Each structure stands twice: as structure tokens, then as C-alpha cells.
Length: 163
Picture: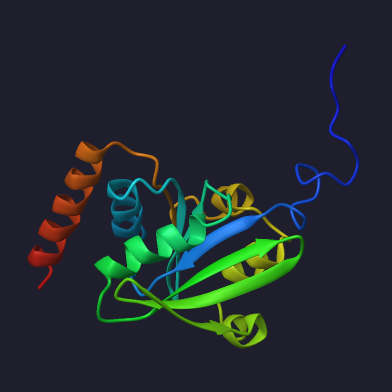
């Protein structure tokens, strides 16, 4: 006997599942994935034209605030957005230097966002679906601390070489 997923459950309907994500000014997805990992934030990161976008594994209440504080502390000089979708409602807060700022209208914040971000936040696609169509743009933030440090060193060396 096998169990089936009830109709309309979050596993069947991504639009009803909670999504917790961060849109950062960091352009390199590998860097954001490593920074997330070093801060104990698991998830997947996709590179977009607007910056790296992390979709977090932890969708519990308060997870977006914890992640927003940690990552915005690293990216001190520029704001980032912490986004959350629960029961079809999207909330977005600006974070700068570890401090939560104002709440933004989802329509305003997502107006010029790349399609990948919009589809994720609207629930029409999941990060796993995007990973299949953009395999060279998606990075796993579930790595060990040592690997995260190695990734950051590698990216730093490449950046230095390309100066």
C-alpha cells in the first residue's frame, strides 16, 4: 500500500508551499552559496541579472529574518531583500548591514525582477525546476565549512587573476 499526496497539498501545489528567499547584490552564485553555508543557512542559489538569489531550505517562521541579518551583515554597504511567501501572500523587507528596514510592496519589489525570481516567488516554479533548466546558474549552499572556504578562496584567486 502506498501513500498518496492529498489534492491541493503544498507538495502538489508549489504556489501553496512556503518560500523563503534572499535577493542579494552579490553577483556570483558560488560566493553567496558559500557565505550561506558558513552562516548555517542551507538552500540553493541561482545567479540572475539582478544578483544572486538564495532560496532557503528552512521555511519556518523567523528563518527569513535570521538569514537576512546574517547575509546583510556580510554585504554591509548595499541593501538586499528578504522575501517570504506563505499561503499565497508575499512579504518583502529590505535589509542593510544587519538591520531590517522597511517593508516593500511585492509589486514594487518584483516589478523589474528577473523572471526566475518572479516565478519562484509567485509559486509557478520551484528552485528544483529552475535548476533543471539553468544547471550552470544554480549552486548548492548545503556544503561543509571547509568546502565553503575553499570556494571563496578559489573565486578570490580567479578575481585577482582577472584584474
